[in-house]
Amino acid sequence: MSANADFHEQFQMTLERWRRHLPSQTTTHLSSQSTPQTLVTLADCRDFGSFCERNSSRILHAVKDDLHLLAFVATILDPWMAQPDLFDIALLRFGEDGYTELMKWALHPPGEDAVGLAVQCGLLGYLELPLPEKPARIATQFRTIFGNYPDMVMDFETFALIFEAKTGTEEHDTVISRTGAAELFAPQTKAYPGQVRESLEHLRLRQAPVHIAFISPDGRVAANENAFQMTYLEFAMVIARALSRIELEEPTKWAYKFVISHFARCGISESAFSFLCSATIETAGVDALEPISELLQRITRQPNGDN
Image (spheres, rainbow, N blue to C red):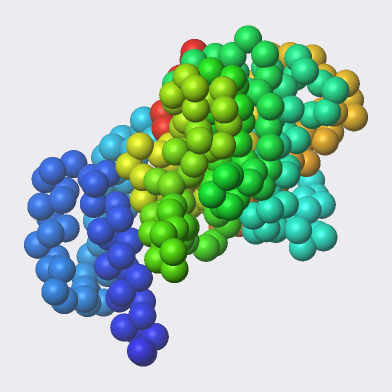
């Protein structure tokens, strides 16, 4: 592919990505420039550039709510950003098992029951699940009676929350039953809730609800339509927000800073992360549309003041 053709294709993708942000008459204008079947020309590119300059205030007005949301997220994360990222320096990134262990620690540091309860309440509030009276028992690489291993299970006695973590791989099928040599398979997020319930007697006897969250760098969709979709950026935001309401000892606070700042960066480009850490989010120009789009894809739920 030539450099020009590659540029045209990238432009077309950017145009389609931002079409939803533009007013209807703007969309009509852009639609007349090209069709989905053909790449835009260099003349189209020049026209679009001048169009953005002429209409930047209208474009930015269309995304003002998104800018407010990102500014809110940035305010939550700002006190917890640590430099440098020691996990990144040590090349400890995009490891599903390692990330699961970090999540377990963040949700209940050993010996810190009050901190664990506050953080877990923050997480459950964000997911709109019942709030517990005491911290959950958390197990990583939980072995079900079916021989499968969900990444993390939070047992609240009256219900459970599973986390299935991905850092680049896709959800895969897992065995749900065996009859002789025959095996029946289902996607992880569909198989694990029932398997965890059957593996924990107190949940099985109550037929208690078992929820599952599918966490990834980019917020990809789980096979189970009832699964919570979550990103590591959201996890970092939830933890940071919960911690802002309690007092921490300095060593614990710094440990949280390293975990939160690493998860906040997970799967996000340097330009998008720099934009999130900037003090100019709500006054951004049209050149910030790409990082805004990237960050919005990482926030799957609308934070509110009650979490």
